[in-house]
Every structure is written in structure tokens, then in C-alpha cells.
Length: 241
Ligand SMILES: NC(=O)c1ccc[n+]([C@@H]2O[C@H](COP(=O)([O-])OP(=O)(O)OC[C@H]3O[C@@H](n4cnc5c(N)ncnc54)[C@H](OP(=O)(O)O)[C@@H]3O)[C@@H](O)[C@H]2O)c1
Image (cartoon, rainbow, N blue to C red; front, side, top):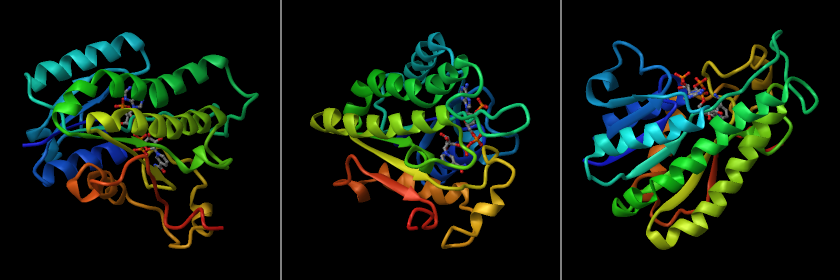
């Protein structure tokens, strides 16, 4: 049985991805502050590591726990999905000049540094599993977004860059590295008012977490064996205008 490690799988895209992989015969090991929801079929069949990825010392703990669970077995996929998109107290977008600088520390720790850490630390295990890494970036990493703040957007731009660098460096080890770049997906991370953006999405609707999960799974499967260093938009055509 193949094993995937997914960060930020307590809800939203990460949870849908854990469910999707388990339904397709994989073992999913998840990591976030909360467990996957009660009553979810994934909960019966997977293992969870509780960790706040904002704190650097917890990254080492999470990796050690993962190795303990793997018990010498290889890892076949790493999905760097955990994400944090802070807003101001009244829900407004935080631009470059807004908020405390510590917000940038937290955002980059969760959205970017955790991905750097796990990609580096799990390389040997992934090489043994001829594995794949999928980073979850964002449309906000490529253009100014009406709701996503500047720290979030620049952390996602950095994650897109990391995908390119890892793809070059890890390919000789037999590890493919790609990104999935969601547009407006119906999860808790969306801001009030997102409905207005739907008018400018050619498919005229939000995406579902399952529609993102299917693309993540594709990038971890042999069907994508010659796909490396790609960033696949999953956005209903939002970026065609
Ligand atoms: N939904 C969209 O429209 C959209 C668009 C573009 C990109 N994305 C990206 O897609 C990914 C998933 O987002 P989502 O929409 O599913 O958001 P979500 O529903 O808010 O889920 C975010 C996940 O990240 C985890 N997380 C947040 N802070 C964490 C921390 N300090 N330590 C560990 N885990 C943490 C959360 O778990 P806990 O709270 O339990 O820790 C949760 O499982 C993110 O990287 C996001 O930036 C989403």
C-alpha cells in the first residue's frame, strides 16, 4: 500500500485529499492542529500527527512521528497543503503596510517554511518510494487578489518558486515535484464577498475541495510520470481574462 503525508488535513482541501487518497487505496498520514472531523471514514483508516506547524520546533517533532509511523517503510507522496491567510480584525485584506510584522513570520512559517522543511527532511524516504511532492500554491501568488493579503500572496509566490527549485534538485533522485494552484475553492479559508468573484469565473461557480484533491492525486500517480516542475491551475478558468 502506498503512503501519503498531507499537512493541514483537518478540513477543506487537505481533508478532501486525505479522503480521496484513502478511497483510492492509499494510506494517509495527516498533520495539523486539529484531527480530521468526527465521523469521517478517513479517521478509521489513517494516522494523524497533531502539530502546530507555525513553530519550527514542531516540524522536527512531526517528522520524527512520521518516521515512527512509517517504521522503515518508504513514503510515496508528500502534499504540502497547510495554509494560513490572515485578515484584519474586521475581515479586511492585509496589504503590505497593514498589521504587525509578526504576521508575516507566521504566514511564511506555515505556508512556506514547513514545505521547505518537509521536502528536505523526507527526501530519502520519498526517493525510496519513487515518490512525488505536491505543493498547494494559489492564484493569489500570481496576481494581486481582492481578499488574499500580501504576506499570504508572497508566501504562495515563494512556494511556486520552491516547486521549480525542488523539481530540478530532486528529479535526479527519482522524485517529481509539482504544484496545484487553486482559484476560489469552497472552504473555510474564503472571505465573505467571494461570491462576487464568481461572476468573473468562466465556469460561474466555486470549485470543490474534491476537484482539487483529484488533481493532487493525479500528480502523485504514475499517470503523471513525465510531469515535473508544473503548476496546474484549478480555477474554472479564472485566469483567462
Ligand atoms: N480555498 C481556496 O480557495 C484556496 C485557494 C488557493 C489556495 N488555497 C490553499 O489550499 C490549502 C488548503 O486551504 P483550504 O482552503 O482547505 O483552507 P482551510 O479549510 O482553512 O484549511 C487549512 C488547513 O491548514 C491547516 N493549518 C492552518 N494553520 C496551521 C498550523 N499552524 N499548523 C498546522 N496546520 C495548520 C488547518 O488545520 P488546523 O487549523 O487544524 O491546524 C487546515 O487543515 C492552503 O494552502 C491554501 O492556501 C486555497
